[in-house]
Length: 369
Ligand SMILES: Nc1ncnc2c1ncn2[C@@H]1O[C@H](COP(=O)(O)OP(=O)(O)O)[C@@H](O)[C@H]1O
Ligand SMILES: [Mg+2]
Image (cartoon, rainbow, N blue to C red; front, side, top):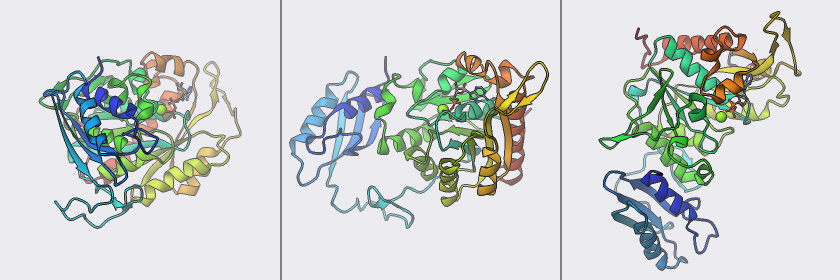
């Protein structure tokens, strides 16, 4: 059974906006959505413009009340053109272009330790592979590690860790799942496989904030965040929600135009998040028999990107036969083939991440043996 929140968000995502031609979710018409799984209370704000039919509010309420498990709907109506709520003075800060409202300011979360975004320009370059293996390697080194899957479009952390349960909610807090010594949270635990495509804009912000604030992570040394590719809503939401200690950018050797990856790196720098390093993945192939290394693609993408960004190249992870199959069975390569060149490279990345951030972070990560 889907969680109540998933049902409510799904219903809002399917509900057509009478004027905008999209749905209530993607249009941002329904916002500030809070779903209390325990009591069935739903509260939300509905933006009702001058030209919108007033019946929209009634219909939205009726639609939500009809959802199984919903016991009460608190709906606040706001004029999108009207003045922002005068309950508090908006702090001076970067403006969110879309809404014309002040961008939310990051709220420190010292118990989460050093928050590290794992990002890339393109999909399929190995972000999730790097995030998963660095997380496991850090846990093996004795650190307390969380891994948050912020790839709302294609969450694959559940499969990579072989975990498919629904998280429990206790005392109003979502309990992360745990595998290979790493605490995990993913949208993939909460919604059906095909549902995430509808999670756009404001709702991504909600999901990311909820994952940061309403999940019982406990005390962590590191929280790795597996991002979707590019520089979209998830990246923006993350950096607006919490202070991010560093970004890791994953690229492949043959990305001739390092353009996308570079844009990704610049985006983090622009908001004051340093790029801790570049990881070149699928970097050649080492024959397991002879140890001989082959370059399969025009190489050097990682080094070029590192030079452009002015960040270190933390590792070159070779193509590893069997890595994908093991990953699909829930076994990251540092566990499935710890002797492999790929595992060694990923462990090295983890070690430099630990070293860099332990030397610099205010919330000093310490080893718990
Ligand atoms: N070094 C590698 N050797 C072999 N297969 C890899 C390697 N890195 C990633 N893969 C495989 O490539 C695919 C894409 O990797 P993934 O980590 O899911 O990329 P992303 O998160 O950037 O979309 C997956 O099937 C993964 O198992
Ligand atoms: Mg991924």
